[in-house]
Amino acid sequence: MLRPVEASQARRALRDKGFVEVSKRDHEMYILYVDGKKTDFLVKISHGAREMRKDEISNNARSVGLRVQDLYLILACEHGAEKTRELFLTAST
Image 1 (spheres, rainbow, N blue to C red):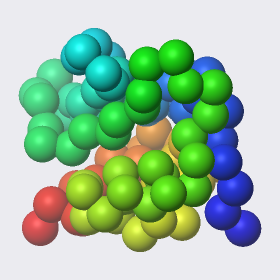
Image 2 (cartoon, rainbow, N blue to C red):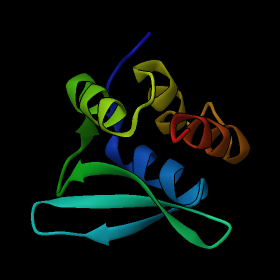
Image 3 (tube, helix red, strand yellow):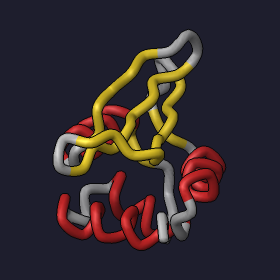
Image 4 (tube, rainbow, N blue to C red):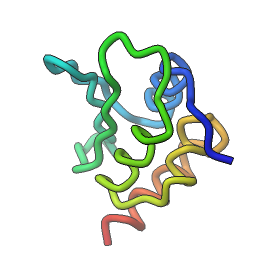
């Protein structure tokens, strides 16, 4: 079931799975690196956000070509780093 995810949990989950934070003016961008190489996959979190709302998770999933449920499971720490890479690499083909 898709629910909002605490922003601190989402940030930690992304960092643990190989994403690197790049702060922009209005958002924190997390870019996935695989084997030290930057990919085109990024997840945005609003600065100062306490949680990622369902619509934000959905928009992020759509922008990177993932199913909403898969991105939710990544952010909720239910998919590990290997599964995360597999999903993103599959989405890029």
